[in-house]
Image (cartoon, rainbow, N blue to C red; front, side, top):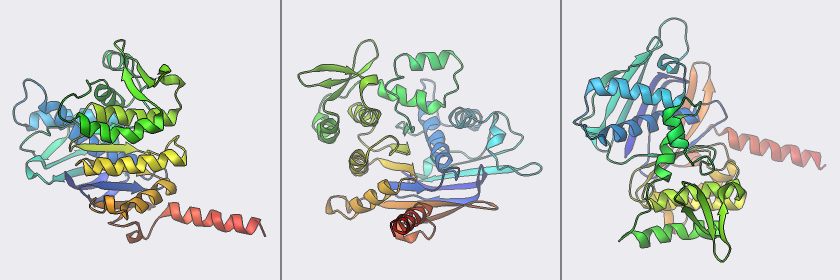
Length: 350
């Protein structure tokens, strides 16, 4: 579990320390405030650790290995022209630092780099071991329709896609789990499959379909995009990527979903937290935010720990407010805009 992330002069964050809950972590704010940056820097470091640890030649982490692989992962995920572009923009030379603290201190890691850095970071604290399980990153768009041959094309050609697409496609293509945990998987999949009207299947040619009872298979491009996002979650649960522990980073889950499906997604997020998944979402949807808050009060989810983060632009960078409840946040632009719209609507009707 990720406990703390400290960012010093990293992109829009001049000096921010975030303390996370073991369950659900919700980052809210206007566009351009750095919500995706938070998710991607955390994902990049954890994903890199899991990737390096799975290599046949992997020993214990070394500075020589990490100073190159962390830099590469940040560049491939966040897509700056050079690594140094991720340091805060300011006159002259600037140096940023990123520090991670986990519940297992053996995973703690701190690194830094300057605006002039191109392909390496400086490791200030070396972790003692690798992460065992790959994190999951779900981007704003669905990936099932681009899945066929995407990984092969990505790894052999230059594509202007962030590497989260490739990483998630690899997880989507893993084999579905069989055995003792099938019952647990079936319980998690049931509400998703009811909403989709069928099951997600992957054929031998690498194409995903929605298998409809009594109607055969429907090609994924013919399925509504909102349902395709649910299908991604269903597939990642069935392969075990979102089953026991691990991390889920989800950028704007509400995108292209109607309110009914947003409510289902909110409930699925809580069920994943109950399975031991530490969930991080970035959103500017007041509807999703309220639905999560409503569910948090239900008896079924009372034990799920939460943290909320509001990002507010300031002259020196982005200010981060955080708390265990939405009410703990003084700055909530989403709510301000919603109330303002309600006032304007009432005035227009008079």
